[in-house]
Length: 451
Image (cartoon, rainbow, N blue to C red; front, side, top):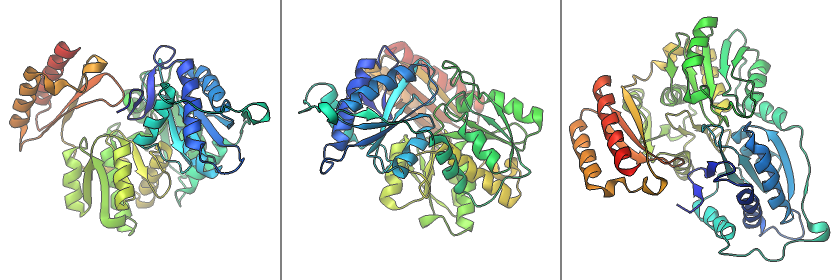
């Protein structure tokens, strides 16, 4: 991994780790690397989208200056979901797209991630090349002057264009359904309501009044409690929760119970199989997916392949093998027939269309997967220590003992976070109390030694 780019772009506390200077250099370097091979005198065109964080304005201004400094035409899209930028980069035939967002992280964080002209996140070697210019290891030659300096050209149709696209991905209406949505006070606060309303649903929204600092605060797909309560209080048929940049979603059934990404993928893949639309009869999941998903796959006759944690690895497997659906338990789901990245709104619409077409209640559909108890505990560590936990004999021995104890009776997975200074300890097993106790004990040990 590079010095700046993590598993999902450059991320950190805005104005401390992710400064205006870094944003400027990222814009200048990224635009140069991604557009230096454009033939002739055509001016490169680059889109910028952002979520609702207050720091987004500062970073957008700096990023825009960097893009213009290498002659780009910059097209700001305003507040739109991350997957909207991926889609609109293709629709508008832009040379690249940039998103200013820290996804599900708290408001003080922000990030910068890129899409290439085909709407895909950048490969490691491209990120490494951009990084070499940001860090001054390489120098950009011949910056433009006079009329070749870049400029800004606003776009006011981004939200509607994306909503129309999302609506077009299903072939039924949602009339008669009462759907509660939690927008995480983030990028979906306009798009989700507009799309569902356009499809005829009765939409009831919470956490859809962003103020710049309330994004992801006790709401959205990482804090499901308020949506669970809201669904039952209003008698909704189903609830949908997005994260801050709306590239992932989770659901709540009519009884207020969580429906996670594994269950949503199983519901959609099973329906696709019955319709003859599940290419190679395969669903792509990650090693973090619940054992219940793999058991369900065997019962349904669906092959489920596992990748490392991270949507980039899921996508790589899908593109390499020609699969059409894949994703993570967290609700980051990719439907390659429609978009090139995880898309919370598209995923929600695919799931809702299955409910509508089959007439099943959300609880009935989700029961396709018997979710085994799973506990995830985070150990907060120093950033430089998060990849070296197995180098400490005491920690390595504790991990080995735990894995041996649960072998055949469950599962243990310890891994560093790709975006935060954390080591994640996940245990799956039959006894919720037992696995909680043991996961917490190991996480506490890792934090004590490496924190």
